[in-house]
Image (cartoon, rainbow, N blue to C red; front, side, top):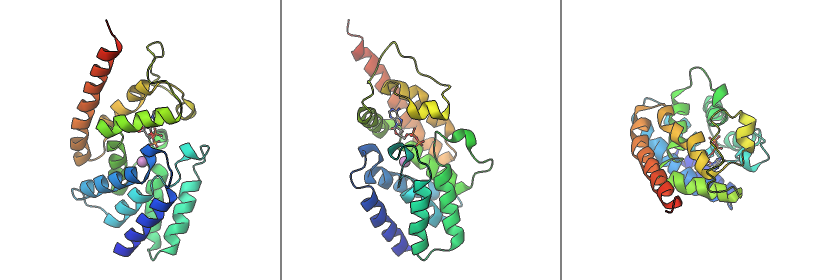
Amino acid sequence: MKSTINNTVEFVKEKLEGAEAGHDWFHIERVWKLARKIAETEDCDQDVVELSALLHDIADPKFHNGDETIAPKISREFLEQQNIPNETIEKVLFVINNISFKNRDQAPQNPPIELKIVQDADRIDAIGAIGVARVFNFGGFKNNPIYNPEIQPNLNMSKDQYKKSNGTTINHFYEKLLLLKDLMNTEEGKKLAVERHDYMLNFLDQFYKEWNVD
Ligand code: ADP
Ligand code: NI
């Protein structure tokens, strides 16, 4: 498996060349490491965890006109060229197809532990100081306003509204980032989320203090 993991690393690095900085190889590397860390505390298939973490953003629909079929297709083609049991390939594809926050309405009833782990890892990288950096990079990439006190967060967006949202980046904290702590699946994920969650609350306090110059 070691060589397959190495091949996957090389494949993903190449595919993500020039990606938006919040969804680039370094995001994948952090999620991979976080997923391994959480996996140590759970009874799971380590290969499925590592391969899913590495492939989970290979073709993010956000950057492909909303097309959700590209990532599974590319991943399957790649995995089938490697010497991997079919069962492992199916498990990896299941994780990749179900990891997304915006698809949480259609989440599977009894998710496999490997999905829970990689989803937690991906969500942990969306919060804390890294989360703050990523959210503003993405907001800038979309040319969204940083903040507008007249635009309220929308907590009941449909999947389509969420994808098209050109709301403010500060609102994204309320629409997603601050919700993640309580959506963690694993005990280790919950532990890792607490400090990062508090950091974002402090960031927001300071942000409003500086915004409201008196
Ligand atoms: P998923 O890929 O799990 O469905 P998202 O598409 O919501 O999740 O986003 C992944 C990351 O991209 C977020 O954690 C955030 O950093 C950034 N992001 C997504 N949507 C926005 C947005 N509207 N404004 C700012 N950042 C965003
Ligand atoms: Ni991701």
